[in-house]
Image (cartoon, rainbow, N blue to C red; front, side, top):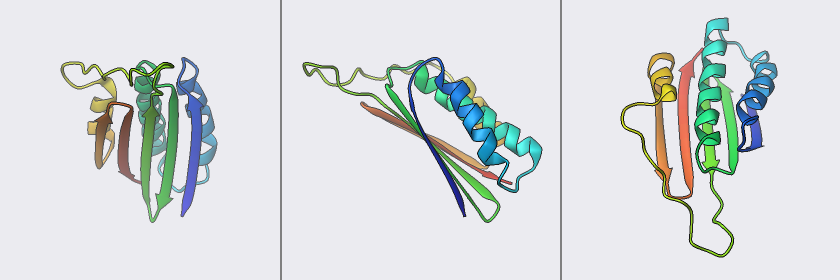
Amino acid sequence: MRTWRLDLDSDNHAPALARHSLRGWLGLVTCRDDTKIDVTILVSEFVTEAATSDATHVSISMIFDEGRLRIDVHAREEAPAGGGGPTPIQTATGPSFADRIADIATDNWGRTRQPDQTHAWAQILC
């Protein structure tokens, strides 16, 4: 089993930093090249969604075990100083670009939203 984790500030650089860091780790796992490309694009889109939301931190973790990749992306929002709690998540109508990629490229995926955190996950066979 191989694992990988990356914690990032949620800003405009986060998707590129995630892609760059992920490429090195994906070189260590036994997956088809087209699957590695799909994983890189999907992680980038999940991180882009976090970076364009009210999230302040993004955590990415991956597990490769017995020919299957598990991707987890957590986007967290800190409560503003002085209280008030996190800003409610605004939902768009229809599937996002990341949703459409996940539908095509993964075996299974999902997303859960809470007022202060969003968790996107996917599983892909190599």
